[in-house]
Every structure is written in C-alpha cells, then in structure tokens.
Length: 238
Image (cartoon, rainbow, N blue to C red):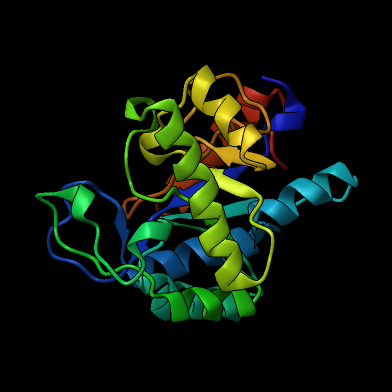
C-alpha cells in the first residue's frame, strides 16, 4: 500500500443511545465523546477527508485524522456536530441523496433511524462539515446497469451540490462494493476521491481504506487500530 494513499480515516455511522443494534453501526454519545477525547489527547485532530487529502498534498498532514460518517443519519446534526464543535474538529458525512428525511430502509430488520433532511444538510454544510455522496439510493453499485450507475452517481452529486452550494468531490461506496467498473464510473462522474468500507482493495485516491469504529472502541482499542494502520502503512505512530 502506497503511503501517499494511506491516511488514517475512521468510519462511523450513527451516534445515539440504543437498546438493539444488530449491525453494530451505532456509538453511544458517551463513547463517542471518549473517542474524540482520545484523539485530542494523542495530538490528533479530526478533519474532513477533503481537508485531510489537501493538507497531505501540501505537506501539512501531520496529526490529522479523517472522520467520516456513513448514511447521513439525522443524529449527525443533533449529536455529532455539537460534539465535533466542542473539540474543534470537522468531518465528512456521506449522504444518501435520494432518501433525505427518510429512514435506513436498507438495514431491515434493524432498528429504523431517521436520515438528515435537506434543511439539516444545509445546516451541517454551513457549519463547515464536508458533505459527500453515498449515492442516490443505498444500493450495491455492481448490481446497477451502466446507465443506472451513471445516473446514480451524477444525480446524487447534483442534488447535494444544490443543497450545500459547494462542489461535491467525495463519494463513499455503499456496502464498500466497488469493482473496476464502479471505480471508473466514480471518476467519470467528477468525484476526486472515494472511500471504501475496509481494506479489501489496493489503496488509492478512489479506493481510500478506512478503519471501522464502533461502540466497543475504547481508548485501548483505538490505539490498537491506530497502530495496525501505521504498521500496514510501514511506520509506527508517535
């Protein structure tokens, strides 16, 4: 894995209290606060992927960690954004553009979670959060026809750009599903980078690996994940 394309990027989903979470996508607010506190205590600052990549390109990436939140849950506006603000952090939220104000119907039979509304997308963008695309709908891209794939990528980008007033440069593959065809289509749609769900492909600007973060990830587990990342990238963290 080339070090140039191996920034430390964390993958969150939802932050709220819960009773049942079969897909392990939810972090309780107290645990999330602990995770942010750990980053700051170890000299790391959480930023959007856009800022992370641009800072690294300019040689100013030391200490920066990418924070990403998949699916665009409404609790990003009510729970995540206030916590990030307290720590002076930013992040990237990947929004399902065709499901604004809806729910995570793709997680059946898991608990229903509300998604960001159009107004909330504008709110978080105005607060300095990068809004990226998670597609028009939360579907496996390899199952789409070429025409549907093109529409899915371009239309979602247009919707979100219209809401935020900013160019949308980031994409996140739903389910992490991406082959050569999907990667080429993302580039053709005008995205500058794309995130995967794990480390199952060689790292590159359109296949950025991420580290999953869940409710079990306390300080010790975070350090272990940071260490694993840097050993994979060929260097040991300070």
